Image 1 (cartoon, one colour):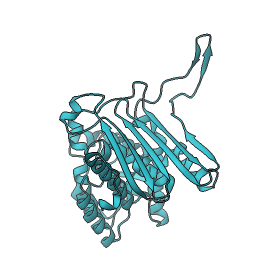
Image 2: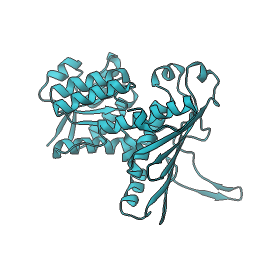
Image 3: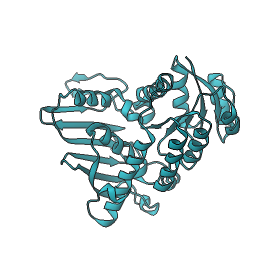
Length: 333
């Protein structure tokens, strides 16, 4: 069975997903749309698919599924539109930056019985998935602590900061999802701190460039998340999980994994420069999982509810920062 997929949005992340779809033997990229014709035409020419409007994709019964890579403020409307016509939906995070809008969208998904998968690609990274495998097989015993480090190589444009929702909703939301994924528990306490240390102009855009959060479950399990918008040495992505029987860690990845030893010392190549290359395997694996869920008629994961829970944690972190106290996510929603 070949799954016919339409791509909505032909920008940077859309191109990544177009490549993943084209390489999946069980999927076919059958249409592309974008607000910018040149972007859509470039993807269409590269992968041999037609350019279509949103309306044409909605009404085309031969299209099984859509991959939504459009701007965040369009996600909820598009999810609802495609849910109502019975198409399978993959959507990049977040569904929306507003919790009420996310909840109303998910109600439509529930009412229509639609299948929605959210793009938390890091769950599919083979290194992070390897940690989850060891946790599930009991290697680490009872989990006690986790540390997630995520540092970008540099600040995004100010224009992006203005529409991103801020460091907690835009950047750390991936780590909130990873914390839930790895520990397998919901958190009852969120304590956040944040600063502007990279560029003072970030404060003019009502955001932070440096942030840390301590999450605690009802049973006392702890997860520390550290984010920065500047790492001079590359894209810093590490995880460590500690339990009663041991520890498992995923170190930084490099395009070339070698080590050179000379009289000057030990040298290794630089890290990946950003997510486009660091998470290539993860993007391919998540699209493969989406395609497999459609073919097998199973519920795709991560779900829209996972997206909601991650956003609730982000909102709890913001509330913690504003009020200078630990916040129970139950206070948010």
